[in-house]
Image 1: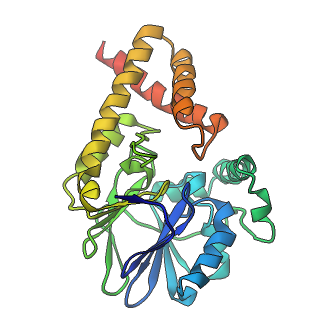
Image 2: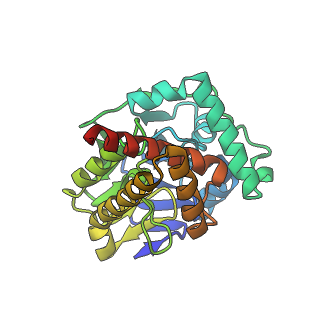
Length: 301
């Protein structure tokens, strides 16, 4: 079953934000952890939800970034500046990107662009949400754990959606937080999202299938529970294979990455017209994917 309704998922887990972009809160005995950073325009929404759900913000002592894309780190400055002692975790590669002037510029510009596209620019007013190089933290890698007291968050390196992607798994809840690396549960479908390296993305999906999952916590369009959560990663792998076959067929027919990208953008956005990112950003996503798949095809020949 899929849901994008903010609120309590289970005794120790909440979904916060909106349908198109959300974050998660894990409540341990010792402290609470925010997983993922969502879009910056969510700041007033999340602030109100914390109050409405009776969540003690003083207990939020940790935040985990799953990858450094702008739509997954927008609220990090919000939480860090409200709580200067907040411990922020991300992969070493993510921290490299998040300290680059170009990376910071992209996060801020794309965050404003999507807010404007969705008519939410006013939501940014009154909040210090810009990324600067004052947000620092600890690097985590494969096998690391974050102890919340009664809950332990395990870190898995799952590259492919981005070069800095990690996933989090909580055994006590059988909850997986793969961010976009698990595929995006849009409508009744699963959108493959192997942006930077589609081969690695597929390999990461195969690896995650060994986990027992009762709650699949995506960053866009909510979470999945029950039998669908158990089978979600298998279905996501199938969706990835089908999407790759489609990209290969277009490239084989056109012989051009540019033509492939143009067709992908036109076809996909006609199917998902209200997707969180518009053609300006989605074109870049498709270009990354098409270049990698075309390159892999050329290597085989």
